[in-house]
Amino acid sequence: MGRHWLAGLAALVLASWSQAVDAAPPLWKIHGRHGAEIALFGASPNATLNGPWRTQAFDEALAGADEIWFENPDKPGPVTALRAFGVISMHGGLPEGKTLSPMLSPDGRARMTRLAGKLGVDVAKLDRMQPWWADLTLTFAFGDKMRSLDRNGVERYVKAHAPKGVRFRAFDTSLRDLQALAASPQDEQIADLEYANRRREAGFDTLEPELEDWLAGDVAKLSAALVEPFRARAPKSFGPFVNERHRIWAEDVERLSGGERHVLIIVGIPNLVGPDSLPAMLRRRGVVVVGP
Image 1: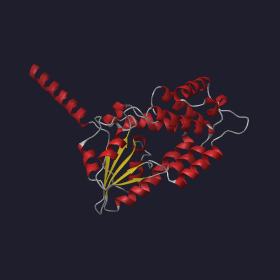
Image 2: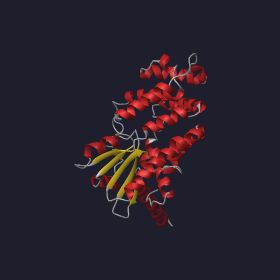
Image 3: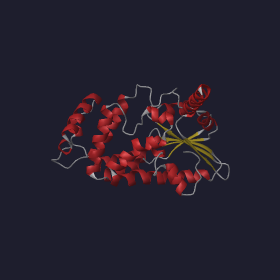
Image 4: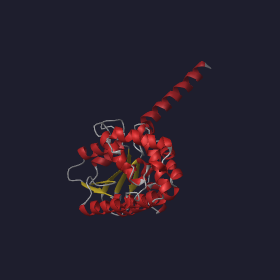
């Protein structure tokens, strides 16, 4: 009896240990019919440069890549920058005589004032902005504040250890994303701003996962924590901002899968989990995607 109990306990411990060892941020693979090899990896802003997120599969995908794709280029091109400036100039401000603060909840007003002070943003300028542009302004300021910390380690590691001669590319839907934000219903913009400010005050980026969930590769938990709350608070914006973005990306990935290149794709993990994710979109288009 005792030996059976000990054997069962040992098996349970070994199984748990094995699961812990195997746990890692998820990686999806596409094997094209003409030799293309595509790996999709979901990054997190709270990833450290030398954290435990790297796996043999990731290292092999990086070492064998001749193209590496990111969401957006390091610097937008002049045409994109000019058009983005136009969107902000035309749609980023509130009408004369209106201010943002009265649109927010009492807690939301106080929180925005506190955050503006911590992040070095002029709250009077925020008060004249549409909610979506105030949200982005605080996003940029939050990113600058966190710049000195060991974050965004996936992107930094990839750029430092990419194979010689690799081509860096980007999906670059930032302008379309900006236009979708500007066109979104104002009540959803406000809901997004208040949600994001609660996250920022707690020290997290808007779509930043819990580090443990990301390292464990728990796609269901990541979807429930990041994607579904967005769908719930901004259902009208979800389609243009999420589905359309992934549709555009899927067209590029499907085209790449028909070639011969070895490609590593690095995008934010929220884009790769849930029923409207990039892998789900690719599967609906008939592309065989191996992964969770």
